[in-house]
Amino acid sequence: MIPYEVYVEVQLLRKHGMSLRQIAAEVGCAVNTVRRHLALQSLPKYERKVKRVTKLAAFEDYLRERQRAAAPHWIPATVLYAEIVARGYQGGQSQLRAFMRTVRPAPPAEPVVRFETAMGDQLQVDWVEFRKGRAPLYAFCATLGFSRASYVEFVTDMKVESLIACHEHAFQALGGVPRRVLYDNMKTVVLERDVYGEGQHRYHSGFLDFAKHCGFVIKLCQPFRAKTKGKVERFNGYLRRSFYVPLASRLTQSGQQLDALTANIEVTRWLREVAHERVHGTTGEKPAARLAEERQHLQALPAPWRADVAAARPQAPPATVPPERPPIVIERIAEPAPLQHPLAVYDQLLAQCVQGATA
Image (cartoon, rainbow, N blue to C red):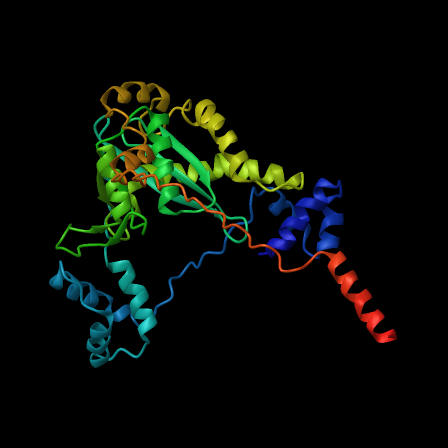
């Protein structure tokens, strides 16, 4: 059998119009070999006709019987290795482990259980990090569980103030407030899990007040279980592939960098014209159509959060006006008469002194 490279060369030389004899002379094989390989659609793989007898072959039945007797439990390969060595096995453990992988039944795949929520019951929220450094860029993503309608807002930080503002904008865009909102372990929502007992967490006080104000219950995902909020997780990937990468690459080609303002303008149009008008793979319907139904089951929009905080803040007592003080009267004191005499007096005295000196 000729190597794969030679097989490819035979095919190419034939396409270039060379005869069988010319190809055979060029490649260095018989004409019949060239003819046979030109007739093949692909190079046949070499298969061993006689199965090679391994050192483990004499112990395979014993190993199968041992595992069958231990079912549904599993005997480690190290234990079985010691047993067959005592029976005369002279091979290594790698050969044993390779055989045991063929004996052990593959575990059944974990079934994907889709948890469908009622209308207006759940919103799943997550952050998507697109860029770090001096010009960071993050996306707040929120997806309704029933309709799969989503809201996206690009920001430059993930502080609690930004999180609350994004929630307010999301509720306004979706048309109401769901009864429950699902999060992962973001520090702007939960500070410590199970600190007061199982399922009793210590939440961020500012965000907890916001949740009470809006009327939704905070729900947390199970740790290390991204599938718990799989609806928004799948949307995050869709957002990255279908929106961010095409837009950011187009701007990069023109020497620009995508910023939050541009991203928010573009993503609003993309959600309205593309994401909410596509037929969802799971529901088989457009998110926009299902959102029209779900809006009827959402809670009413609350008052703006900042205005609510200002109204609840205790008012400072009005400043007291001090009583009017009596006007200060400055009395002028009469100036004393000057001690200096008129100049004529000094002139007379000077004249008298000069007369006395000459006499």
